[in-house]
Length: 221
Image (cartoon, rainbow, N blue to C red; front, side, top):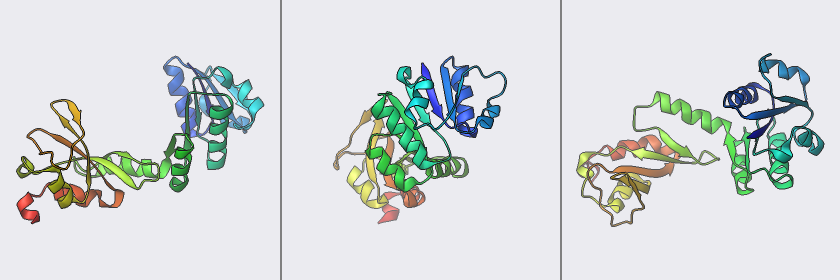
């Protein structure tokens, strides 16, 4: 696949080299020709000098045949503008933009541009390494407000209803993995042995929700 990357900073460089190792064709764009030094002499992809939202620059980078486009420069506005041009003008199927301002990331998601909000993503990765097993999150929305996490449960929750669990923990049960199959529970669904429960919670309450799940239902009453 031909992939176009806008931004030859540390992230763009790492992404370009990783894609090339996977035998993809890569074109990388940056307005500073000195930035291409990061790629090293063994990089064989195309290096294009210019702004990633300039249509002619994108054409030179092969966007018309690209299967994917990544905007990872240091500027939010440049990233989202170039991503929209790639998607809306050239019809690139897989487009992603890195965004520093997590509040704006949600807006861009609604415009149909997948984003990586750097601060919430980095925070989540650090939490995965710092917190005890079972309290890390599987997913966060682009604004970093809502987290989906696997909820560790006290054994006494077996046989209790999803409604009781939600009331005790203050979260929403998103789905249950039961015997290897995903289940969308109703309020009357009962927790069974060996269920793996995934819940949605506000990011600031993740630790409290996990602690509540580890309590016996009787302790919480």
